[in-house]
Every structure is written in C-alpha cells, then in structure tokens.
Length: 271
Image (cartoon, rainbow, N blue to C red; front, side, top):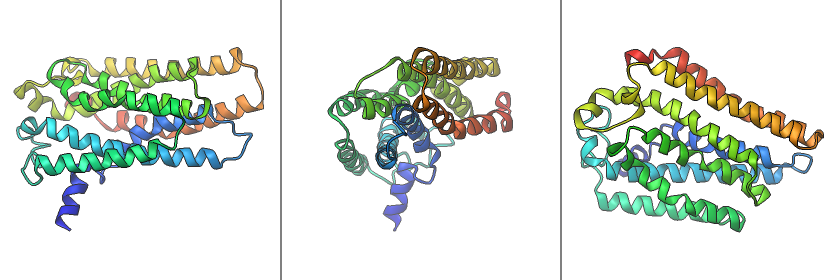
C-alpha cells in the first residue's frame, strides 16, 4: 500500500486539474471536427481515448519532470517532499513507472488514424524537454502551452485526418490560455525560484502580472471569436456548422468558469 501511495503522489493522480488541463484541448479539437448529425458513439469513444491518454501522459510527464528537477525540488518548500526529491522513490523505479505509462499511452494512441499517430509521436520531444526550459529562459510557460495544447490538433486530425485553419487558430489562442494560468501557478514559487536561479514568466512579469494576464486571456478569447467568424462566414452555413459551434462553446464553458474563479479568488500580486 505504501508503494501505491508513493506512485499516486509521484504521478499527481490526487490532483486531477493537471490531466484535465491536458484533456480539455483534445476535447475542443474533437468537438470542432466531429459531425454530430451522425451517431455519438465514435465521439465518446475518442473522448475516452483522449482522457486516458491525458491521464497516462501527464502522469509520465510528472515523473520525468521530477527526475530532471530532483536537485531543484529539494530546495523548494512546495516540492521538497516529492517522492524522488525526498529519496522515497529511486530514479530507476521512477524510470520504470514512466516507461510503463508511456507504453500504455502508446496502446491508446494506436486506436487513432496513421496521421494522428505520427503527429502525436512528433510531440514527444516537446513533452519531455519542457522541464529543462526553466533553466534557460523566462518563458517555460510558453513551451508548456505549445506542449499541453498539442492535443487540440490531434483531436481535429482524429476526425478529419488533415489540418485546417480552424485548429491552427485555436491552438495559437490556447497557448496563451496556458501561458496565463501557468504564470498564475508560478507565483507560488517565485521566492524559491529566484534563490536557486530558475526562470519563469511569473518572475519576468512580477511587477505587473495583471496586465500580462489580461493580455494572454484577451488573445485567447479573440481567437475564439476569429474561429466563430471562420466557421460561420468562410464555411457554408448549415445546421451541422451551427451545432458544432454550439457544442464547441459548451466544451470551453468549464474552462471559462475555471479561469474566472482563478483570477477572481487569488490576489496575484500577493503570491
């Protein structure tokens, strides 16, 4: 039971917001691409696959992050008790866990078309090099946005097997969505990060974070409006397009609530 508890702590399974932030973009891309005039079985099947993939890959990513950040985590109050940093889980065992999770994620991925599989495999270098970015640039949150929202493209190609202007626009906007929320998240570690020499957008914009966050979320919502324009005016307007657009907004409703709560209940300047 102790090993199970350590595994859960290592993969952050008690904190579902992490894998939900990875899952939501997948759901957005899938919802935009799917033809809801047909049956819903395939939609929910792909939705389940993306959810399983998000949980597995986020768990593996947490392990890789903790391996690479082991020495830094020991010096940060919030992370010093993590299983690897505290020595409760060895590097060898952690690599074994991460390998099993990646193998399971591969089994999930093989249920998609060839184009989506190739695109997904192409994102692996991004997923496993992100933790290194905070050592070299003040923009690790930007790299996280590029990585975490890649599933939006995969959600689209899972149905259409080609890339269109719509998922590209939304992918661009979603990067700023992540840039915003992860900057907020980074404020809790500012003092420790500055001492040990790590970088983040929270540190870069600590003197005026609200202006930066407003810019990020403004770009995000502007891209949503642009997607609406493309769907309604550059495509043929029909019932399918209308239904897709309604379901698309329904799929981002949870994110809007999340964002509003995050920005209204936290005084960023005092973090």
